[in-house]
Image (cartoon, rainbow, N blue to C red; front, side, top):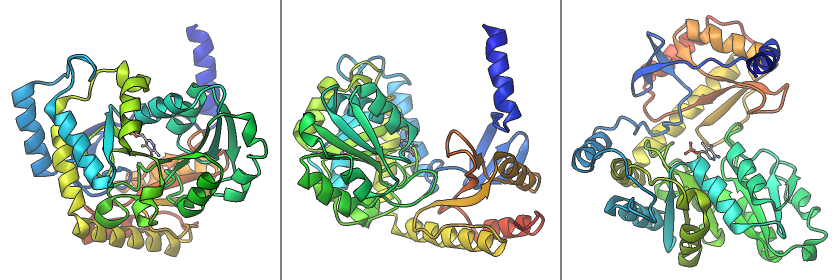
Length: 385
Ligand SMILES: *Cc1c(COP(=O)(O)O)cnc(C)c1O
């Protein structure tokens, strides 16, 4: 076995796809001690700087002290704590839905929800650039899957010529696409789904806390929140905690508590994490100042890389793709910046299509003007594109 696996690994390495785990020893805002050096990190999804927020920490620590670490069981057995229920009610209130269900992660939400809602007699239309966890959820469902061109409702429509062959139809999309930072055309997707008796499933991992009034997400930003029946999100990005959720109607959430396998057959999120996430969500809802700061930092970062000759698509989210092309060129640029104490991960196949390697820069409200100067100075020391 080992020699076979080693050969496959070597093949990946020869294609510039070797991965190394860098170790984060401690972090404060966007400054991270990594492999023994303090670097400016522009690669985290801690968009609002809440992961080390004093109130979030104190709330989680107090709950940890009181309750211990592990939940000890599934929510359906012995693992259901008041913290979980309070967090679900808070998320539902934030998103404007009747109910919400927690999962251990966004990944667990997607791989639980889609197979619960669709099966072998159903059809799923899935955006070409959907997150891997949505793709895995679709595959696990054993439904018939058709992948439409990125953001292209007409492409989706062309795949629905035999709608009557299937029982249910799900249309599945990211809200903010995780590698490009662009938005799904949600209003047109709502029209399309409603006209074709399809259920729209939106994973807004990167819009939650970042876009829309009170950070309620891409659906709220685009004014279609009430029209989307299945709204998935994560607590591990802007909220600065960990965990995933689905917000929707009471029947949907009750159904998921019975039928989503990653909910039923997995230990509940540690109640102290739920307590921390409660504090996080409360802060996020009122954090317009942080969202403004985030927008400002994202604009500045876009401008700096554009001035340096790189192609950076316009956008309104915290995800800024700096397009490089070949995997080794992206890795070289990432390494050169790291030498200058700026960490930006190179994103390669299979996270993005081959030949579309990039630096994926993420902005954060925790970035100070001095941090942005730091980036500017580092860029002046690497070759222009
Ligand atoms: C990060 C991400 C997830 C996974 O969320 P976790 O809580 O990290 O498991 C799911 N969907 C999208 C679009 C993401 O970007």
